[in-house]
Length: 187
Image: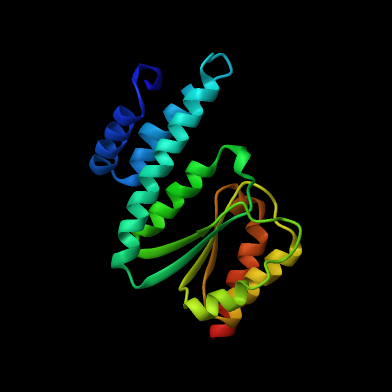
């Protein structure tokens, strides 16, 4: 499919049309996943150029749609990712930003954050900017210092923290503990 598209303009037009026609989950299932599979095929001789064109064009579409929603929404969500930019999942991070945007949030995305320590200033940002939700998306295990900080944001600032992607499975026990602590604190 992608190798048949002559250039970025046609890809932009096609993506724009498909993103209008399909709900986001169906767009991801029917378009994004199959194109990712084809583009990332090790036997694809044009893999690097197609991957770069595909991902950058998809990200541009997501950025545009997220920016439009930001102007209309008063509810705020912070989307965090600790994944290195070169891991090739940045377009999925932006698709998550678009999903939050479609849910009515003005999204602030912070990606490619360092794994090595806690995020200085996170609590202040959540408090000062009045975020209603913090979402962490990723594929890698987070250090305990960051998990403790996220739990504090959830409990002390009444700002729900949720995990998306493989990170939700990796830290399933942490999520259950967080939900349990919230349940006990509200009773």
